Image (cartoon, rainbow, N blue to C red; front, side, top):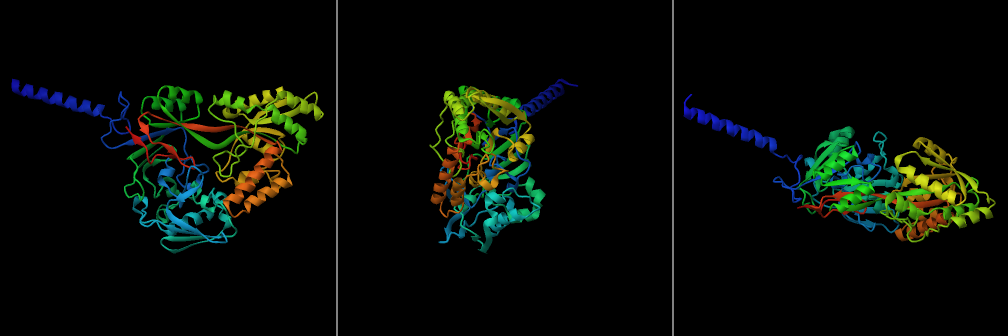
Length: 523
């Protein structure tokens, strides 16, 4: 082999090595790291990487039980109206609506030209009619019938492509709100007809600013900016949502810059990341930590003993010790982000000596024996122990029973549990939670054994109200009555945090506590 051929061969070998090396070092969109200055080099557009530890297994909104089961859902699906941060509703897929004088007919006038993802054509009134009526299909097993008020809808008519009319059986002050929450996400009839029930579970078709492209719910899903979107286009071009079941692995990926956004309920971690320059957005849940009693059981059938128990609880200690001051003491038994929540009424009155004095007055000078039931999970253990110690300091003789969730539910629903502790949720629309403490609900959902005609009457007035103002007045009065009965102590709010890299800006919360990424930008 002559020298020139050897030189040529050597050049080819070096070139091949360089090509292989470059390919090995090339960063795909899914493995891209953050540069040392915190910037993200991405020639293919701005990509937002989300991480969390869990997600629902179905994309069908009929299967959702909370607004956060699928983090991409609010970016893909839309409603006739959208909730604002103050709880009011604004037009979304409907440009406007009319309400008849008798509050029984709602006519929605739809946006024209709105397109479905996946080339399924134009959104029309038939899609709205289909989206509501399909919840009545027993095969679907919808979990949204009650929150949609489906039993109160007499008929749904679509007289033309851009008009849909709902006729109600009785007035519903919250019907527009029902059309604004995740339960009423509008789905494509054409897509559902083609994909079938099982296919739609895995392939969501909506009208939102992002369109689903690939993945499986519960593992990893991706969505891209929908260029035919009728509204303002997002700045982010693609969203990748990955489920990382192990929390420590999730944290490591975030710390390495592989994820732009994660969720966390670990207050220590939240503080650590804030100190390190990360951003933290608090996301309140529609959930509170409750300590309740059943007023049908001794000693809590005595109102003086119930007053004593309210003096024995120090909610600030729960907030400071469990949540490191990041949560707050609730002002009622409805979370403040819920519609018609009462604010500024309940005032904690922690005074263990007063509690002991009241117990003595009620005939329990040597202490009142009680059993406190709680769930033996990681979330409930610490507050149950705190409640036990506080009640003992207030003169109660406490037998703490930590049991499996199934056992706990059986105890409280049957009315057997005289005292219980649990983190419990409320829907944004509070009808169910306010109504659950009426006399007809005991035993069952009325865990507190409330049989109070005054409370019943106030709830009934709220449920039959034709205006939001009248319903608020009645429901607030009902909440005050229940608080005055001293049967349900709300010890702490409960939420989580969305943590983001410093390069992320524009993240916000919607009125339904979904995260809103439409205005997110990436440096």
